[in-house]
Length: 281
Image (cartoon, rainbow, N blue to C red; front, side):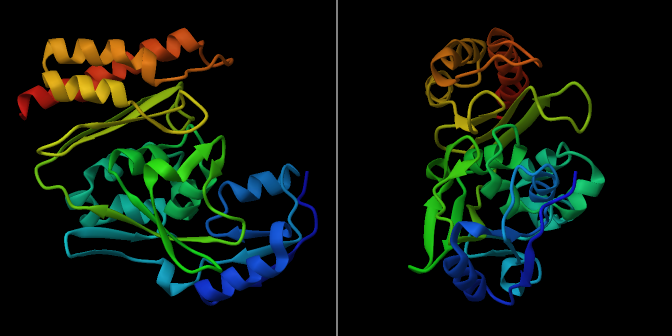
């Protein structure tokens, strides 16, 4: 099957992209890496009248560290994240997670902003944004705004972004000496995860345990995190956190796994990810 006919425009700035979205409304879609959009077009799951290419907007690119903040442009590709020394030094969780994203060909084109805006519940990067307490920078007709990652994802492939807004960048506060971990279980390398966990624990504070593929969006396991904060990464603390996952997660049944299996695997990943923290405390 081939995509329905559409017009194509290349935006030279965020302001121009916003203006085009405002003018064309729901009939327009943004194109960055296209790794989610193009399959949807070819399957006729999406049929916009206009594609607005934002891939060459300079202000949406780049990785920088300044003032205790790591800033990543929305059109930075997965491959660029994987190869970045700044990411490896200041957000190693992202380096580890990116290696699990699909395959090299997709990582070469797919973008950070595209993954977050697509809000696939089985994708790695939305969970990483939650775990790292990231801030999502958005621009639109009313001007720029900043949304905490935990407020950004609202449901299955849904975010707080309006149709005429553009995701500009992601900011993450530097957290020296933090503990982190990432694990996912899938049937084959490059497949969508059956269950995944991105975790981050600042030197002082409550851990952030972000699960994916166990609900309609990436989700913070808040009760489990509190159990770990109270008892630490001890056998007792991990056991309490495992029990608390029943209150945190909403696993589903599908041909890949039952809800009960997903909850069991979520607990397995918790032990794998958090267990090493006891040796770094």
